[in-house]
Image (cartoon, rainbow, N blue to C red; front, side, top):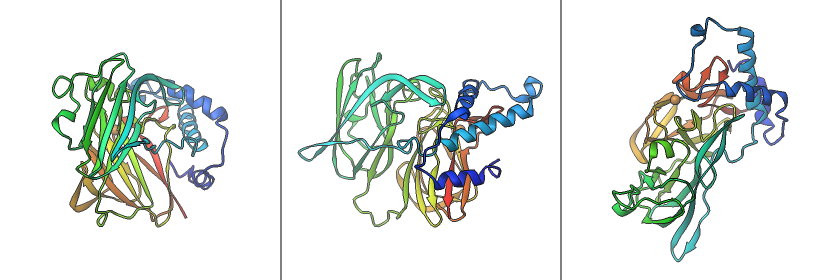
Length: 342
Ligand SMILES: [Cu+2]
């Protein structure tokens, strides 16, 4: 499906920063998106007695056009780091939980729950051994608790209401404090009414860089890809295609992708055209990295992979449970592309 548009993709990739107007394609895809499934309620074409293939093609094309026209327009898509202040030798971070609308895909605005007004919440990134304090203010209409998933904290900082702490009730605050012990790719998310709160957006990356970087791969790009499904629908980093953004690389680049599944379902992430080398699972480096082109990521799991970008082109990159990625109305949900420029 990408052959037809390959030239256009490459042109767009080369001109990142040049702004295109969303125009008519934008409003068409907004209409199409309102009819697209966000959950498993999809009726397949043969169940509806067939489709108008020209209409189907037009809707597929409109989505791809919208994606192209918006390359570079969401500079925060691949994550922003949460700023901190220092209190002595402690890194202090502020998180605020809010309920607010979030546009998952064009025209598809949902009531979401967010840290600091974004999905995912901003990335917390520290170095192994650092002292960390996270002040959480709950401005939502339900109680909350933050679990630092994969991070080895003292038990009292584990973030499970009624097990390790009282719930953070609406209008109140709670402070988490611990030493960042185990380096790796971790997460933070709600652990109170979590099926709703986390999947509606209360989730983010928590990365601990190792002190000893001898074995850290040298890369040209380091990308967090946070997977989600139930609450806000099938989404990569809080957006569903065509509101996702591509990864843009140059031939010869090596990139690192940190997958995190904060949803309620498994998502086998498939990259066309090349292998992904799995170097870490749940933050722990693997003694023997292995190659995959499809990596199944279960809820709660994290995987770090390296991709060597050798073959120029526009490579589809999507969840391979196809009903999470494409419908009769075109691609949606867990779809993006890897662009390798000459
Ligand atoms: Cu999926």
